[in-house]
Length: 197
Ligand code: GRF
Image 1 (cartoon, rainbow, N blue to C red):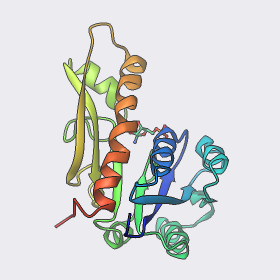
Image 2 (image 1 turned 60 degrees about the vertical axis):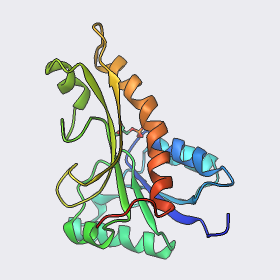
Image 3 (image 1 turned 45 degrees about the vertical axis):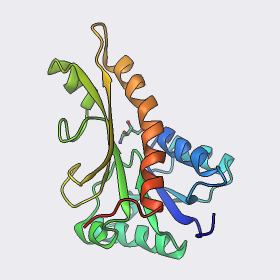
Image 4 (image 1 turned 90 degrees about the vertical axis):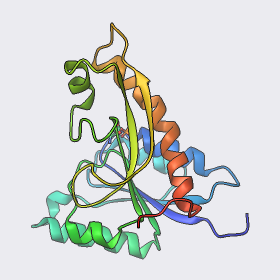
């Protein structure tokens, strides 16, 4: 590949299975992005150890140590800038970001959400899909804009909701798709095949 790989940071708060899928995908020679940094807002996030095992640099920016959201976002932005990050992937990052931070990374920040947006924004998406009697459910990768789970969609894929599903069985089926479409969406952005107008 001729063009330099885009430097990507992944922001996590917990388990980090989407992060791991992105790290794996980025190992391919012809993948247009490299995972240069993983940042967690929680010191105990399990994903930190997984990133380290893969040789990816990690940082903890513990929001509890900052007086305001503006200050913790400024520290986050410093870490990203210091690592010359070009694209940010939110992957189970359970913090609302300030509007100035989101504006700064506009068009360069993605999120994965476990529903077929615009349905079921917010939390507990699998339980809510089941409660609503949805026949299909799924996941979405979208650009991040200030309004929660509302940015333009890059990729979305559905899974069936089966008669005996519970929250866990449905989550497993959706997660397998998440791990496939997030690397595919990041590839599209890193190659300049999608952009936020
Ligand atoms: C995923 O379901 C993702 O869609 C949502 O939070 C969960 C994070 O899981 N935003 P993991 O940390 O990537 O395993």
